[in-house]
Amino acid sequence: MQAGKYITVLFFQVFCFSFCTAQKDSVDENMQTALKQDSLKNYKEAIKFYNKAVKTNTENATAWLGKANDKFLLGERKAALEDLAQAIKVKPDYSEAFSERGLIEAANSDLKSALSDLDKAISLNGNNAEAFAQRGILKNKMKKNKEAINDLSIALDIKPNLVEAIIFRGKVRHDIGDYQLALVDFSKAIQMDSTHFELFKFRGNTEFEIHDYKAALADYDQAIGLNDKDPDLFIDRAASKINTRDYKGAIEDCDKALSMDSKNPKTWSFRGTAKSGTKDYRGAIEDLDKAIKLKPNFSPAYINRAAVKFATGDKKGSCADLIAADSMGNDLANDLIEKYCNSRVK
Image 1 (cartoon, rainbow, N blue to C red):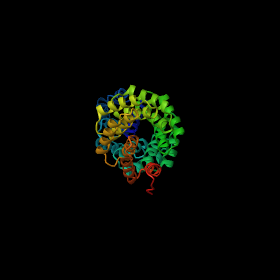
Image 2 (image 1 turned 90 degrees about the vertical axis):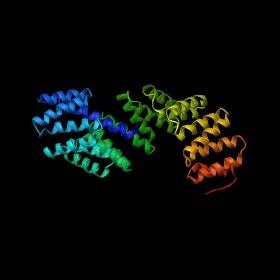
Image 3 (image 1 turned 180 degrees about the vertical axis):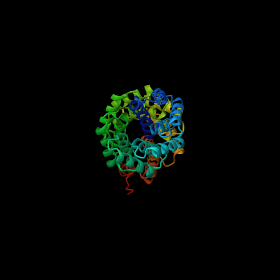
Image 4 (image 1 turned 30 degrees about the vertical axis):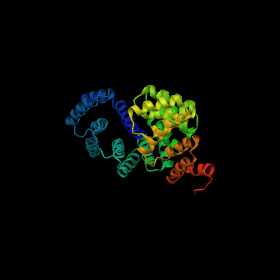
């Protein structure tokens, strides 16, 4: 699952929990039953009772909002937006409804409408932590990372245990290269909820960036223990194993990933690199050729194939691959050309 999708779904699940808790004293029997079904994640059943609640009182904005939340979680985005429009119609100052509509619009890639609704939600309620957090996520999508971190931090000032804000702030910090603070966020999120494999993956990826491969391997092991059906986890672990010279283990992880997805050029490239580490140069070239066939502009595969060719004495072929990688904008390639091919490309 992609990070953005995971965060969006988590937002709605957390919203549902907060929503159920906040409304637990409702005197409406249908609402009480709907909220109970929400807490059990029986969203279809919950919707039935929300429908009864709005039939009894069409101006029950809370019921319209609850229905919208559940419909989104069931993949019914258009219907969810219709219910939110009704919630806002009967309660124009309903901050939470604007916040949730912004969340769905962002999921639909309607960023302009999403930002407008989230701004409105915050203007109506300056303590709406979820609105600040979602606006932070939206600002990240808009490549406004400083503003994103600011909004996510405000959300956490309001609600320190808002786990989705902690996770996404860690993601933004990772993206801008602030790896140590990203690790702090991911570690805190894992302390709060250690059941999601994505959290261990995020932290493992950050540890990989700072070359703490031992820690990264431990987190990838945890992630795979929670979900062994995601080929990306095996690819990530293979990369760490290559960097710790566990080439056999890396090959095994790549084999596992390829059994689930044989079209990913990165997997073939990593396996080729690992085979080179075991001095299986023929196998390495075959895998790297496959990576390039799948993605002709995949410059890391050319770099890796150049290394194998150089190791086998094919300097001409090695330099040709480096020149090809350089033409694709790979910064490392030019340095290697100067060092090994006695020429300057740039």
